[in-house]
Amino acid sequence: MLEREREMAAADKVVETVIVGNYVEMERTEEKPTDIKAKLSNFFWHGGSVYDAWFSCASNQVAQVLLTLPYSFSQLGMLSGILFQLFYGVLGSWTAYLISVLYVEYRTRKEREKADFRNHVIQWFEVLDGLLGKHWRNVGLAFNCTFLLFGSVIQLIACASNIYYINDNLDKRTWTYIFGACCATTVFIPSFHNYRIWSFLGLVMTTYTAWYLTIASILHGQVEGVKHSGPTKIVLYFTGATNILYTFGGHAVTVELMHAMWKPQKFKAIYLLATLYVLTLTLPSAAAVYWAFGDMLLNHSNAFSLLPKSPMRDMAVILMLIHQFITFGFACTPLYFVWEKAIGMHECKSLCKRAAARLPVVVPIWFLAVIFPFFGPINSTVGSLLVSFTVYIIPALAYIFTFRSATARENAVEQPPKYFGRWVGAYTFNVFVVVWVFVVGFGFGGWASMTNFIHQIDTFGLFTKCYQCLPPPQKLPMSPPPPHHFNATAAPPLFHHPGFNHTHNHSP
Picture 1 (cartoon, rainbow, N blue to C red):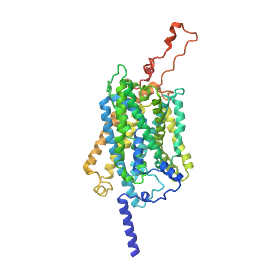
Picture 2: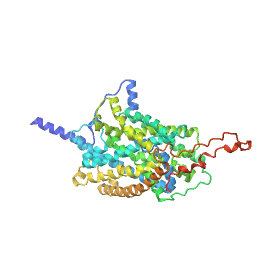
Picture 3: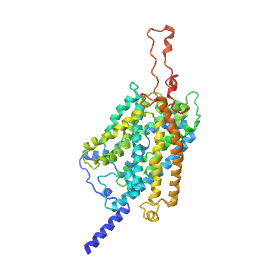
Picture 4: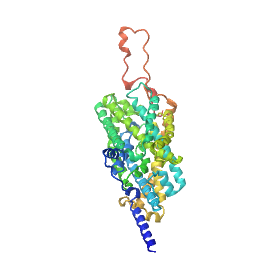
């Protein structure tokens, strides 16, 4: 009898420990490395701190979209561009907070049942399954995987678009083949624990690029006859708005990032802090490029295309290429996990076997990047149709339904903050998020972005070899021209080419 009472007391203690958020996995003690090699490996390879999570969030949130935000400003106008960045930054931070709360709630409940996640990475669809059932799981899995699939596609398209401005000897489709093979090497990175050095370097790279765009545009000055006529068409307006929705919807990997932390309950404010830093990069760079080039950006979705070639620009292009490789890994790693679980390889301890099993995930990404190489318009389409549900609507609704009963609210591991009005405030804001994103993001944004996307297909066609490339220079005649015509063959300025009308990428 005494033994039984001791066991019950121990069980109560475990439950109490779980309730306050101390997880078994986080509390385990590991032997500290003694040799230099192991210490270096831990320093560069094994991340799990709050700082690692912040670097990962900030690095992953803004990648190639940094280059398309000036394009969005030309569609929205300066004021709307700034306001939408601030607005969607707040909405994105709130829904990332909701995801973190639901993760903690799910993990707490599972660990009360003695579940062990030492060799298992929790994912968003599993959180939905555990809290709300299989139908929510299926919907979450479909949206999340499709978004991450096209997020990876966008990184490949961006790689080809950027490298073309350094080396145009190969067309963009060929560069897509090459970078697809390079990005496939991410199959060897086991989990988000192992992105420590990559996340840090990625943030350094985007910081350099953002401030290069800002300073280079200011030094370049406004082009002759610059016009800032946006917004001019409602289609372009909502296309630009959904690109910004996409920009601050990069938290589809929030659950995986939290699971990689030693103390995931500390994640709550990390995404907000990351967003505040990202705004210091996106606002100045987009505003400066739009100020300098104005409506010319409507025909140039990549900001690099308008800035003059220089060693500084080439450095920015190279750094963005490396960063896109990192972001490809961020977007694709959750897909690797889903595939591993589907084929029963997720808990395999052999890195080579897991890497080989992951390779089939890269093939459809490669293929889709070749079919739809529309850098810029594809961001808005993915934002309106996928991001709107994946990281805004579904988390807000999941939070509402998870805590719909008084008992669930009373026993919630994480109570809503006082300054937000507790449960009434949280529910009110969630309803606003669902209605706004569904009507404006998915409704108007989906219509506008699909209209623009279909226009790209009609203009360039699927599998286009070199999207938004300058036409090849005309061949010189076989016989030498008269002496007084020698200078007539000089090419006009690069971005005022008379034959460049075929690159218009907005709706008529």
